[in-house]
Image 1: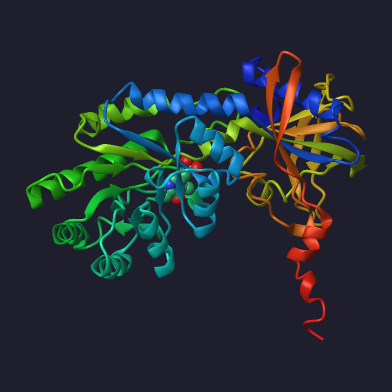
Image 2: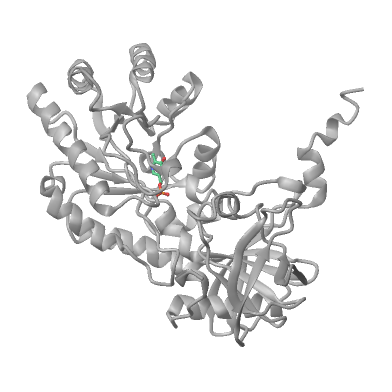
Amino acid sequence: MTTQATSPSVGTAAARRREQAVRAAVEQGLAGPDAPIVALLDTTGIRAAAAALRAAFAAVTDAPVLHAFAVKACPLVPVLRLLRAEGLGAEVASPGELALARAAGVGPADTVLDSPAKTPADLREALDLGIAVNADNPQELARLDALIEASPIASPIGLRVNPQLGAGSIDALSTATATSKFGVALLDDGAREWVVRAYAERPWLTRLHTHSGSQGVALSLMARGVRVAYELAEEINAAVGHRQVDTLDIGGGLPVNFGSDEETPTYAAYAHLLKEEVPGLFDGRYGLVTEFGRSLLAKHGLVVARVEYAKRSGGRPIAVTHAGVQIAARTVYAPASWPLRIEAYDAKGRLKQGPAVAQDIAGPACFAGDLLAENRPLPLLEQGDYTAVLDTGAYYFAHHYSYNSLARPGIYGFAETPEGIRFAPVRTPQPIEDLVVEAGGAHAEALL
Ligand SMILES: *Cc1c(COP(=O)(O)O)cnc(C)c1O
């Protein structure tokens, strides 16, 4: 038994909204026998997170700050549009993400393109639109040299550096290791001198970018990464004799608490730590860009799944539900790194009471490891009950994995109104015909 095994409803406002939303989803038929899995987004919670981010930085600096939401974390147009209404921009890392940001109306001045593998066409599109680009490596800078020589640009251009500070607790998400694939590795032989020279030779190189945090990375390590970037900017500006680097992009990566409803660490705590560790960052000489993703959305999304069957195997109770690897690939394949809280609801969508019984919460896919939790103590789930898989607003249901050709579930935003919970469609459930088209249905005869 682990401590996060139970689902502590600590009575926060977010927990109360969630319980009402599950109940309403069942009562209104968004979840039911014919809709055995549905994803929900707490609009109020998302707005509050965006406001908290802006307030945290506004409290420590008067410098202009663009908070560019990392589209990767929740690539849904209505979410990007909501965040835009809350004053956020977009960090994009592919032509697809750029198209989503544009569909949400995010303007070029509020968009940043990062990606380790931009093609010449990707770069040209970004420069044509005038959106900011962070180059990853010397070869990409050379491509930019050629494009900029051919025609003048409006885009601010930066270079991504890797401070090589070491890993957090999840290797696959640690961006600042000695051998990370991202950015220019600053501690490698001659790298720092090369970077300073690269700026001296390119007056249009005016930004500096680092992104060293992620789930499993301590705030202190993140702040050290930002300090390395700040000190490098100071060194470059001293070397060229004027303030050529005018904007620091400090990335995202605030870790998220998946163990309870408490939102910790907070943006305010991180901004204060940065102010202590890197005071010059906030004194107004640099514009700032942030790129938070997971921390803005994770705790404001959940998946509601019907218990299709409740069975026993080897004496162990197993709830066979409709939420598994297709919405939670990380949890299924790396359960120790990505445990998720699960709540038990009855067939009417009310939080289930009763003694905790250790049980497996299984998904619908045809492989044995498709479990969202093993031996999880919860009120015993029965056929027709529901589970709520919490904290799945980022990198979960918006990152569908089409194992077993399972259709993408519908996603609905919810908000409290005087008449009760109101839902708004964010993404409609994927029709089966759509799956056939995606699976080459138009080319059925192609291999004969
Ligand atoms: C993934 C990513 C982010 C967002 O990271 P989170 O952990 O979701 O906050 C920001 N910037 C870059 C360059 C990224 O690759």
